[in-house]
Amino acid sequence: MPRVLVVDDHAVIRRGVQGILSTYPEWDLCGEADNGQDAIRLAGELAPEVVIMDVSMPGMNGLEATRIIHDVLPETKVLLFTLHSSSEFVRSAFRAGARGYVLKSDAENELVRALNIMVGEGTYVSPAIDARAVKESIFNGN
Image (cartoon, rainbow, N blue to C red; front, side, top):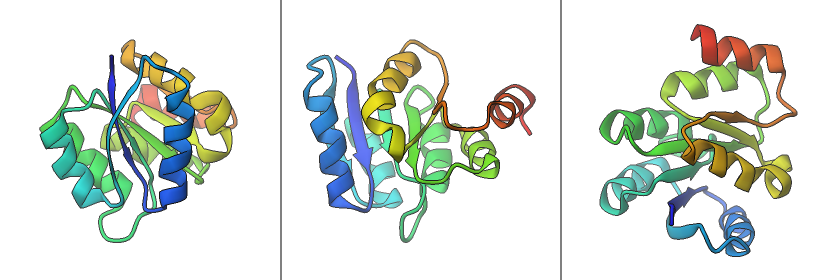
């Protein structure tokens, strides 16, 4: 059963993710954090297979926390979960080591699909994101 750490500075978002995952018994929500620093600490303590991480948080943002988690725990996959749909954010996410990028507006339909693909060693990006920007980000490292 893959273990998931949820990181978002808004409790309502963390509860929403928990609600979505609770209908899928194959996923184990092992912890949650409300900032990037706690995300890094908990990732080290809990060794989740996946971290669902907000991009915009006070203090250490999700991109910086993703970079550190990726460097320290390369087997842990990070899914950035955000409102930001710009190609620059997508590029920054994959440069930081993220394996997935899901818009919060797509969560109900796309979150579990993204997790399944990522655990299966793939990458995932919300379908609402510009496909050309995604391809450039993932395959060209731009």
